[in-house]
Structures are given as structure tokens and as C-alpha cells.
Amino acid sequence: MTVLIRVEQGDITSFEGDGVVNAANNHLQLGAGVAGAIREKGGHQIQEECDLYVRTHGPLRLGEAAVTGAGNLRARWVIHAAAMGDERPSEDSIRRSARRALFLAAEHQMNSIAFPVLGSGVGGFPFESAARYIIEEIREHSREHPLPEIVVLYGYTETDAQTLRRLI
Image (cartoon, rainbow, N blue to C red; front, side, top):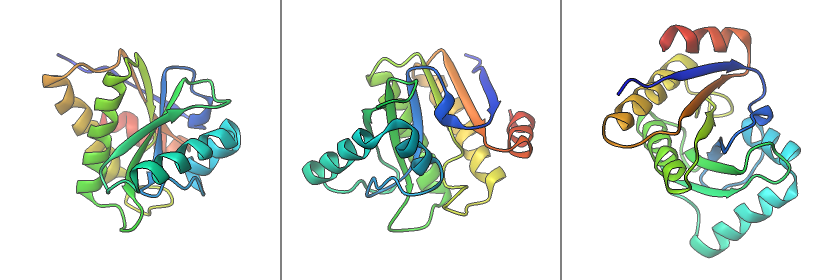
């Protein structure tokens, strides 16, 4: 099956759809970057749900993900993909957290999701490499598992968006 991936430039918190993937740390603290924007625009209830998750289940391992409500965002869910945290992001943590986010999207019957380039902002991982890993995971996942109908990759800057367009 051919995967259709759309690219948008701008703030991922403006996405209207089922799920927004958060570039999370493994303690689910919504500090800066994408996570900070999600906290700011989505409201305190998202952080409260993250805190409850960590109190109940403990921190995520790198490469894992968890789902919370989306508060005041235009999406229904936030998938917190932990590509970084106690350790810096790596190819493995980016790939595994993207893969886990796709599985959670299917479990929650999400038809549309938006991905940032995990690990590349606050995490400092090279943008193009991280983007390539995420695109490869989306394509690989689609070979054996259902994908949401709409998968949108977000580049915050026009340069980032152009890089994403070139890679897909």
C-alpha cells in the first residue's frame, strides 16, 4: 500500500484532527518546544493527565508512547512519543517512539494524526536524519498495519517543511 504523507509548515498545535504526536520526554513533562506549545495551547489538563500517567505507571522508557486527551487543542488526543528524556534522542528511540505512536493511533481509531520531527528540536538530533527515520517508520508500518487516513508531518519553519517535502 502506498502511504500518502502530507507536509504542513507551522505550529503543530493548530492541527485539526484526531491526534497530535508530542515530541515528549520520558517523564512526560511538557516543558519547551512542541511539548511546551501543547501545554500552552492545550491547557493545564494535558499536563495533569501526564502527571497521573507517570504516578500510575512510572516514566516511559525511551521509545515508548502514551495517550492523553488534547484539552483545548483542535485534536481529540495527544500521543506523547518519548524519543528523549533521561538520555539524548537516538535513531533507535526516534524510530521506536514513532512506531509506538502509530500503534496507539490505531488502537484509538484515529483517522488523522500530525507528527513533529521527534528529537530534532529541544533534543538536538539532526532534523533531516530524524525526519528520514520517521518517514521510514511510517512506510514500514503501513506494509503490515493500518495507518490513519491522514498523516501530516509538520515542519515549524519553511526550511523544515521543504526538507520534509524533499524526503517524502
